[in-house]
Amino acid sequence: MIENIRLSFQGIIGHKMRSFLTMLGIIIGIASIIAIVSTIKGTNDQIKNSLVGSGTNVVNINTQMSGMQVLPNDGVDMSKVPVISEKMLEDIKNLPGIADAVRYYKANEYNGLVYKNKSDIQLAIIGSNADYLKLNGYQVKAGRNLIKEDFTKIRNVAVLDDAAVDNIFDGDDPVGKVIELKGIPFTVVGVVSKMEGDFEINLTSLSEWETYFGDATSGMMLIPDSSWQEVYAYDQPYQLVVKAKSTEDMTKAGKNAADYLNNLIPVSDQEEKNSKVTYKSEDTLEKAKELQNLSSATSRQLIWIAGISLLVGGIGVMNIMLVSVTERTREIGLKKALGARRKVILSQFLTEAAVLTSLGGLLGVLCGIGLSYFISHLASVPVAISVPAIIVSVAFSMVIGIIFGLIPSIKASKLDPIEALRYE
Image (cartoon, rainbow, N blue to C red; front, side):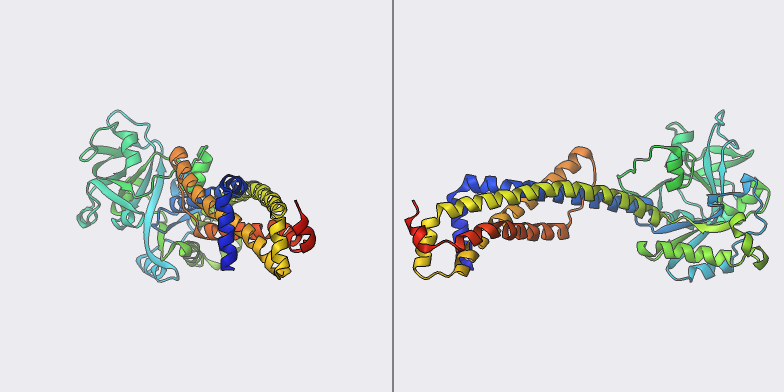
């Protein structure tokens, strides 16, 4: 075998241009597949990270009716919805798959906010504690977070995210400024930003944005939950955000928390749950999988197209091996005359075909990796090199060499030694 491999490399080096042109189809096919798989894998990883909160593993449990999120200021009857107590919150934290949980109030405010003469402000108003920001992956970039005294002294203070600052202040420093919410002044004490990657999902409509990110507003304003009743003047159920122990536990964590809360709905109302307000988890992991499946389906089609060049490359290998058999007819006849058996001749030509395509596969992998990073730089798309794809590609190229080299090898092994020696 080692001798056959050595002879194969001698043949390749002796006919450099012919060997390169023979391998070209294999190189293009493998490079295309590596580039496609790496780009799709990188995109899928970023889709998952983007939709599940860039590694924060959080799931929102919202009040919903007929599959749509509803809030108390939407005018919906929520009298049957269980209010999350401190004890219930501790029970939820101990459910399987859940690492932590925070309850919060929420309202989408469209016309109750005023800053100076500006009143066309739309924000998601959140009433919670300081843990809300940490659990959701926010970090303070100016000012401070909510502190214990804000709750004990019932201070009307607020923390804004970047989107809210851009929406309201037009480049001014927001810390220390006063915003009126329902006629009640709130002093901005901090600005936060969410820790996430540079990748952005291309959502083309408002409905798509609501589907994947939940709010049709232009930012978030966090106030202490101790101030909530002063603003909205009525009791309402909490919403809930839970942190899963891992990304894979997100679906289970959200479902367990929602089931726990919904099991507290009176038994007489169980049959009416579809038409009543209940708690439901926002399964962002499933949404990520849906986008990933769509992306993977597209990649499979592209891989099949790239596979055509591998087929063409295999035909090229068969063609050049047939030419090689014809050129080396006298050599084959001499070996057979000296006692070489059919399997020796067969293995020599099969090895040569396998070495030729394997070398093309390795060059294709290198070109594919380079092409992946070139596409990433040119089109600003993420790339994640797939090691399994590299291994399979090289193995597949070797298989192609064996399959398409089989016919020329059989032809060589069947040559009559006397006729071969007479061949001119």
